[in-house]
Length: 141
Image 1 (cartoon, rainbow, N blue to C red):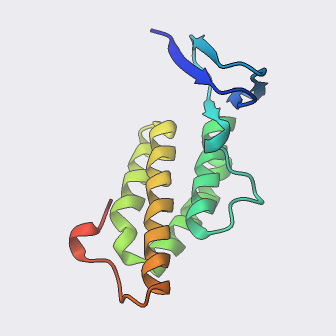
Image 2 (cartoon, rainbow, N blue to C red):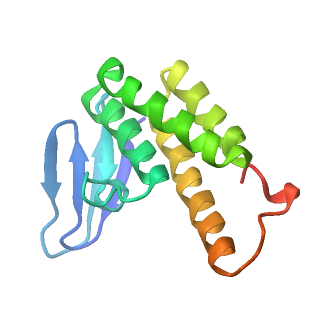
């Protein structure tokens, strides 16, 4: 079954190592085969990976796009270990990312890394709001 992707006018899509830019009209693509695919909104660069969780996402993204897990895996492992030490409440999310990487499900690892970014934003929001932390039942969102 083909993957259906709808692109807004001007939206970009990464397929393998190619960037596809949509014209000025909405477009629907059907993609068959096996290649890493990311929408423009899901792509981070080294400039936009400006928090620890975003750097973890970037490392997973590089594993996914390049299909070279070994090169980015060392960086990911160090970043994940540092994050877990700084925020022990994130261990469930880190474990989920680790499991997806170990099973070769790099796209699912990216989705889990997006949850880690959201979790980090929640943590930072709670700190800036003067709250001591996130309640235990909110862990692992």
